[in-house]
Image 1 (spheres, helix red, strand yellow):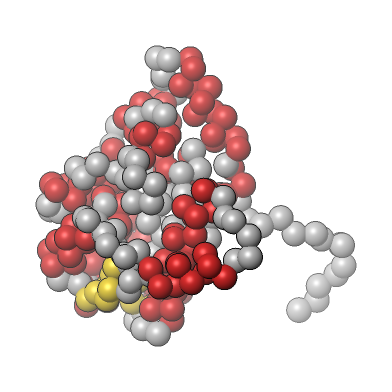
Image 2 (cartoon, rainbow, N blue to C red):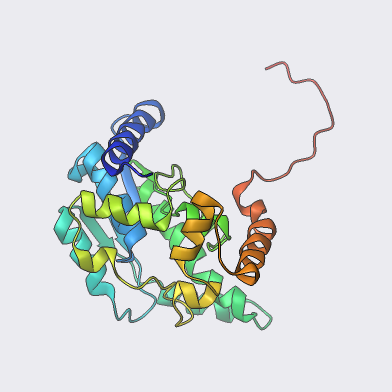
Length: 245
C-alpha cells in the first residue's frame, strides 16, 4: 500500500513549497531527541532545503543517557546543532509554582519548556519550527499540547510509525536511530508501555480498520475520541459581528 519513494519525494516537495510561501530562505529548526521521528523529520528537511538550512536543538533535562543518539543523527546529516540543558529552567519552574504538581503536569512540563526553547532558537536564527509528530501518535493523543504537538509545519503527521520508519530507511538513516525503542524520555517507560498496545497493532487498525482484540479496539477508539481536541483549532466565541478588513 505504501510507496516510500513517492511519499518521500512528495514530502520533500511539500516542504520546499511551504518555505517558498512561508519563509523563503528561512531555516528549519527542530528538537532532536535521537528517536525516529525527529531523525526522519530532520532528514526530510535536509533533503528539501539542504543541510545548511536545518538546525537541531538538543535539550537534555540534566543527564540524558541516550543523548549520543541525538549526536549521531546530527553528525550523520551534517546539520548545525546547539545543546540547551533545560534542567535549571525545569527545576526553577517546579519550585516557583506554589502548589504540588501532579505527576502528569511534571511529565508534560519538560516538553513545553523544550518547545519554548526551540522557538527561541528558531526566532533567533530566521527559522520555522518543525513539528515531529506522526499520525499514529496523533491518533491516540500521544503528544503534549503546546509541547511536541506544536510547530509551524508538520511533515510527518499523516504518516504512521511504520511509514515514518520506511522513509528513514529510504533516506539512509542509521538503523540504530530508526529501530530505537520509542520512549518519551520522561517517565521511564516505552511509548507502547504507556499506550497499552503496540504501534504495529495501531498502524494496522488506522490503515485497514482491522484489529484482533475488541478490548484493544475500544481502548484505541476511546483515546482517539478523548484526544481529538489536540488536533483541532482552539474554539473561539463568534458574536457574528461583521469584519470588513
